[in-house]
Image (tube, rainbow, N blue to C red; front, side):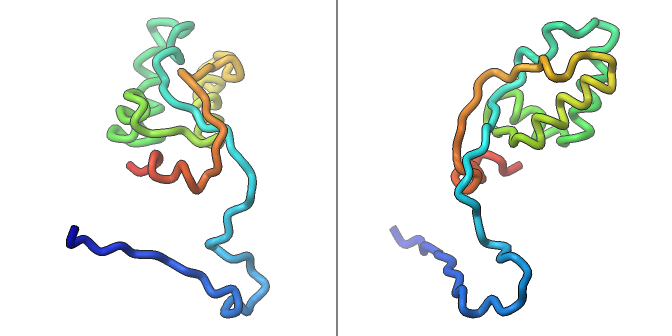
Length: 115
C-alpha cells in the first residue's frame, strides 16, 4: 500500500488538428517473437561473430541479451531487421525462425519491450 497509481486519459475533443492522435492504438494484433536460441543453427562458424556483433549493434548489448534470455519480445519490424542482417551476410533471412511466437495487441506487449 502507500503507492500511488497513475492513469492517463485522453480527451478526444481537445485534438483539433487533422494529424492522427499519437495515443490511438489500432485494433490489430501483431505477431511477436520470443527468443533467438536457434537463429545461428545454420550459420558458418566464420560468420557467427560478425552476425552477433551486428545484432548487438542494432539492438544494444543489454537488449540483445534480454532478447536471448526471452525477457524481451521482438516486434514484427525487429524480426525483419534480424532477417535482413542474415540476408546481408548471404543467408536466407526468410528461413530464420525464433523460439516461439505470440499474437497479441501491441499495447499489451509494451511492457515486454522495455530495455
